[in-house]
Length: 258
Image (tube, rainbow, N blue to C red; front, side, top):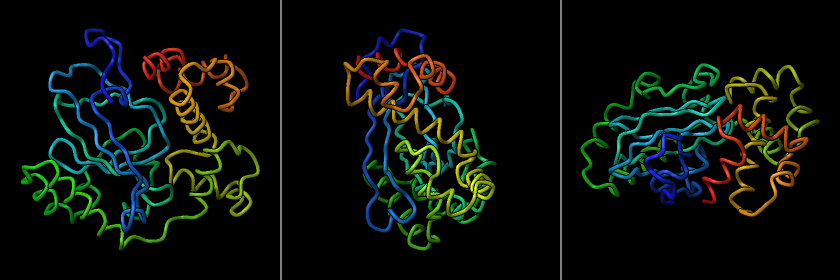
């Protein structure tokens, strides 16, 4: 989607509104390890600061000539990206990143880490990606390598996937994951697999429900959206959204629907 905002303003712009962002479900072998495949191309003249709001996920990306792991965020991130850059990304399925990276995600919160610092077997594919002159060839190479990695990956943590899905759909108490593991074990595993505990994950996934609703209902009343997203009221939503993103709900809706 293209930027509709005035590029001269100093206000950060939501990443989804900067340049062209495309996303699709992961299929085939990729889907064993990843849930989404995405790309983000910034305009050549782009000079604004972008805001990436937290989504409870961890991503593997190709950017700046290297493979990077983008850890989960607690609040909005403001990455420095080069004008005209095209970023290729794969979003890990909930419960899969820990075993493939062999690093608890609590150690990656708010960080962008070169993959070669976590794994010593990626330099060859990085060289091949860097040598690819055609964006389509680079994307296919990136996905083919990742599909090979995914085919060898361990089975995902079902309890963590259940937790993510249930909190994402608004099941706030008595989740199947809690019943299967117990609260103390669930909290420890949540920190390992998501970087933070279930309560923080709940807040972030509630924010994501609000964002989906804004995209689907441009004219929706904010008070109604607050209740439908799972907030106690509009004031609760305003406080929570502002703390997590630095934007008010009104500012977010203006950017998404403007």
